[in-house]
Image (cartoon, rainbow, N blue to C red; front, side, top):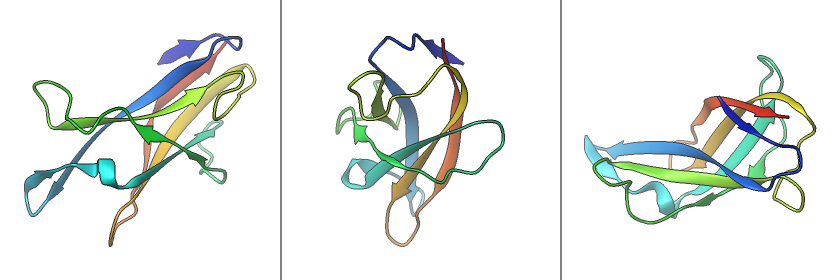
Length: 105
């Protein structure tokens, strides 16, 4: 679980690995969004994310999606625990995936 201060402005990131016909695929051409929910709630509000780079993380085929969380960021969350999700807009698929837990203290 990632923990950040309610006063902090930081990137929250998600590792994304994609394949097409069994071969690694660079998803950074696809739009990516993030959502933050309490408990097991399904996402209803989405925020535009971005990609850290067009190259996979060294030694992997994973790319890094990210969103800036905190004061003056893309999303500002009150103190609490959240499940964060990503939605990747590809064609024909649009996967919605839970990524992890985030604690705002």
